[in-house]
Image (cartoon, rainbow, N blue to C red; front, side, top):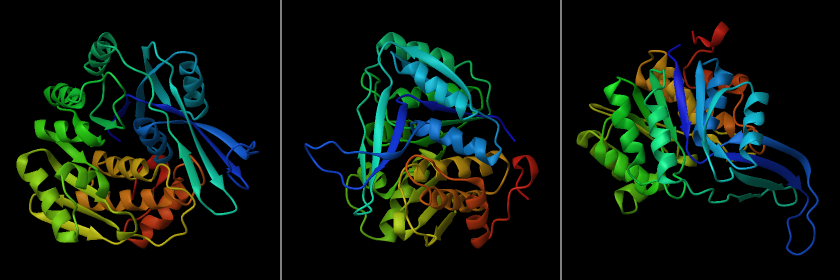
Length: 318
């Protein structure tokens, strides 16, 4: 398996709990409390590790909560490297309300990153030993919109394939710069990028094809929730329906998709097969409560239903 690194600029300590009823003013007593290391790239690394991939999670962390995140990463068995910053690493909370079945998610903005800390991060990324680099998650305050595009430039100079999963101006600026191997927007993120609603499948495909034609990304995988997902590359469009399952939590579905598709591409699979594994992992993630992400057994089972055989020993897929 080709070595993969993930970068998380705005990681989280992800708390998750259950409560009978969420209400204002009164104390809300919770049960089944757990804490996990989180943020886009860290979630991707967690799933890659579960699938048997060789991965290192690189992330910004600091303040009194930074060491807590490091401890959670140790507990999860991840190889990780912190790039120090002064600000406190953020703490998020997802609460599942048993009475209604709804989930409430509280996500802080996170710390501000200084210009000097940005430069240090770029220096560290320029020294990474990997063949694939996943840039996943939002940009924290203080980080310029073109920061991911700078990293893409560094990676391309060293022949490192880049996977991008972000939103807003960071997505627009990075794709305008070009050179990304795979980008995985949600439908909402794709609409934001296009600047207008994408009202049918043909419009979604056309928007993705425009990204490929411009050189923004070689592969565009758009996740569309209950409508499934589509993959666009030069000369090919693949549209697959969603796998019907009972949804327990939406947390980490996109990250699981990115991890599994990257896993397949890094293993030398064709794009369609890797895309199918991504769909299976994204679907498997919604089966787990809170911030637990997907599990290998569920990914294997769901992947088999859409034509991908299971993982063998050591994470190699047969």
